[in-house]
Length: 378
Image (cartoon, rainbow, N blue to C red; front, side, top):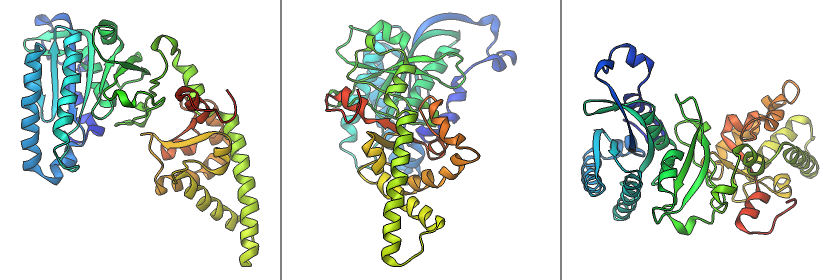
């Protein structure tokens, strides 16, 4: 099936639509509909595991399938199919489905702790309550598709459930959930409200967690310290969490001022003419080193309370930071249009951010969420 970041080989087999129906499979004369709960689970990094150790990976997968099978029985679930490393299961109860997903991740996590880092087999789980079409033992329709898509953007080792499922489990399980926004998922016309089960309560005080799967656009925001009822709409949250255009513009001006002064002093010291080309090279090296460092920001960004990460929430690697800064030349042309994109895109990304898959976060908002002193503005 491939890596969990590239689930396209599995997901089409779970999807249905006008094309399949028009081909007569399944037979529309035999179809009936019902409301049910779908759980979709998939191994993350399966191709890598198979490439490293086929026999060992298959053995672990078989053991894990047995564990999941027992949990399905415990929670009255039915395995519709195991497609390689992917599971589609059905439950009559949303509560049982979510409890099964939570226990599944907890049990597999314990087993992973006994394995080496290279042998760990992590799953993602997506759960949806929706209307489906039934053809014998098979289920089809948007309800299935949403569960599969939620799985594809769920955190590694985590459980992501739809808003319809959350409405049924709220207050009925001893788990916390974090609202992660209305998700745009492939082949689904409307956005899907999604909630992440808090697998690790100790990490719940983190105000922002970001993950990226097969599509960088699927990176999502997770606000743990904000009550779900107080978190709306998502568009307003975007404006708060991501560094805004003017804050970025001031940081850019500060960075250029610092680079011009520093580079001029440096080139004078070594006796080299400080022309445009040497200054641009100095700028590229200077910015790359800072943005890929634990500081996660250039000096101008640090002053303006901006933190830069990739779309998984991690520190930029030196190559990614270099690509981001080198591609600013594209953002400059023809009249800084690439920079102005940061004022209009959902995640406040300029053209060079999109090229490098980077995000600029507003540290003031993060500090406020986490109860830390803010840097500049409220």
